[in-house]
Length: 214
Image (cartoon, rainbow, N blue to C red; front, top):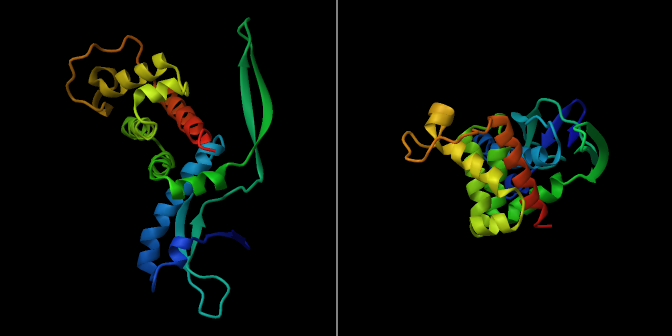
């Protein structure tokens, strides 16, 4: 919520804790913020994660308890714009703006009930995602759906794209020390996936898997 020029985070996890002190707030609040950042990033293209600043605690007669000051700027909108990119047969690109409901709040609520969603969002909410981060999100979604067969049957991503992502992420000759393995017997992928492309793939996978739960 906004108060003057500051944004504050209130959480039931803080309110319900017994005798919460500043150190405990600083331990609990970042975990809550990570999920919020992940939910926002999954809903708003180009969202920049926010971080925690100071802690504000009001006395027993006050109006606010255990609030955490959030650093950086936040833009709050009830609806967000999404761009649908259409590539025509002649190769020309057409971008069509369309509105979609803000999913941040329901996504966060879902994370409170589903640990797999919460874990995936916490990782996804980071500023820069590594190959390790992206692969962890993939594994969480795969296991949440009951295995890779179910994931592919859901048609959230193409099988060839997922295979290319996995081959690239695991092979040291494709991405060097950023790979999940130092040595691997598999052949080097012929067309390694760039980290930007991998981020878009996993982002789409996460968004579609979350949307399927509503």
